[in-house]
Image (tube, rainbow, N blue to C red; front, side, top):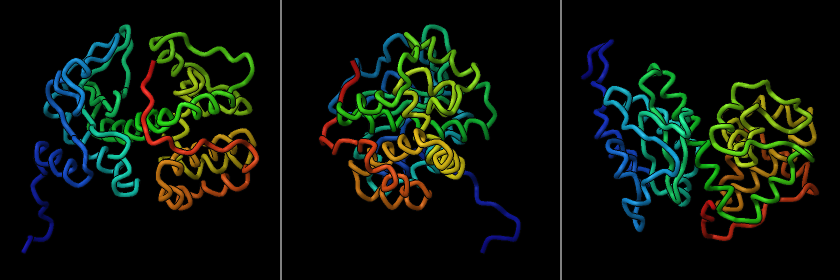
Length: 269
């Protein structure tokens, strides 16, 4: 019997990653970035174009795994593994010298556990990054959806020309909500816009629902995101209903629903 007040010893990172891999049917891994790929891909596919990558330090791994576990619990069993076959943890990721919080490969996610972050921040960043990066694979699973989503953008809106410029947008003022963007970073590219919507729908559903009730364009975009996920796995209908967001799918049925799932991922250009 456990004495009152005693806590079980923390789960070693290697065991934690192995357990998450077993429970969710994907590879959760940290260590040398050169090994960050999943079959049938190979070592050359682990290279991230135009990026500098550093391995995560040992003391940064456990809080990152905690965030990953918390985020995975929000999805129906097997959904994440049907879209992403691996989740990899790095210590630093830079595009043209600008630090990023994560990215994605053909069928995997790369999350950052930065040495300059404290454990709670690493946990929260990893939780957000799973939703954020996974949504890129969700959006790109059917090519038509990307262009339908981009059509929500304001006419003449100036998007960032490269990754460094897009990351710099995060420090700018939030655009007026009438534009449909939920953050300055969301206004940097159509894909980052989708990422921010997904991230906030899973972590700030009440705030997103409030904004959707206030702004019709936001309601239409919320509906599109939810329908895009549910087109891959209908069980996500219940997930978004429990988050209080599925109502916008029926309220905006005439706004242009996401195309049905094609069953195959779309590689980035």
